[in-house]
Image (cartoon, rainbow, N blue to C red):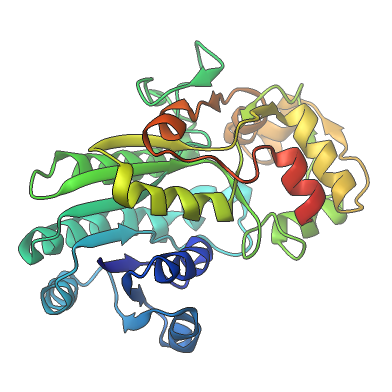
Length: 312
C-alpha cells in the first residue's frame, strides 16, 4: 500500500517506518523540520517536508501522492515537559490534534484515501470514577483538572474528526504512556534524568493506575490496524496495569536512582496543581482486550516490569 505517515520523524514514526517498509509498503514520511529529512530517508521512507497547519499545502501534497492510507502521528511535545505549565507546553500539540487533524482529514477525502489511522491517548483521559480498568466503551473525563481541559478537548476533537468522516474508514488508536527509545522514559530520557536527580516524588497514596506501552508495541499495533482494524477506537496498552505506588519506585530502581520521596496531596496541589494529584492518585487503567482480539495483536513487552528492567 501507499502510505502517508504524518509525524515520521517522531518517536513512534522512527519505529514505525522500518516496520512498514519491511511489509513492502510504499511510505511517504512527513515532518515539519527540514533537518529531519536525512533521518526519515535513512529509515526507508520518501521524505516530505510539510507543516500540517497549512491546509493548502496538506491538500496539495496528498493530492500529488494519492495515498491509500494516512497515518497521523503528529505531536509537538517538548523534550522536557514542565508539569506546572502542562497546559502551555501542550498548546502546539493541541493545535496539531485540532487544526492539523482537520487539514489531514479534509485532504484525505479529496485524495480518495481509504483508511485514516490517528494517534490518540489512553493514559489519563478516561473518567476518574467507576471501574479500575476502562474499555473503549467507557466515558472520558467530564471534569478534567483545569490545566488538562484544553488537552482533553483537543483529543476529543481529533477523535470526532476522524470517526465522523464517511469518506474513509476512520480508526483511532489510544496509546498508553509510552516508554522506550526516543521517549522521556528511556535510558537517556528526561523523566529518567529527573528521577536520578530526585525530582519526581510519589504524591499521596500513589493509587492512580497506569497502563504503559513500549514504542515497539505502539508501532506493531499500528501495522496490525492497517489490515485488521474496523472503524472505531482501540486501546493500545500492555497487559499489566499498575498503580504509581508500584511502578514509580520500580522504575527508579531500574535506572539506579534513589527511591522517590513521598509528598502529601496538598503540597503537590500547591506546588504543581491538582492535575499532578489526579495523575498519581485518580486515573484509571485501560483494557487492551479489543485490540488483542480484533487486531490479532499481542504486545511483545507484555509488562512494563519486563520493559523497564530489560530496556532501561
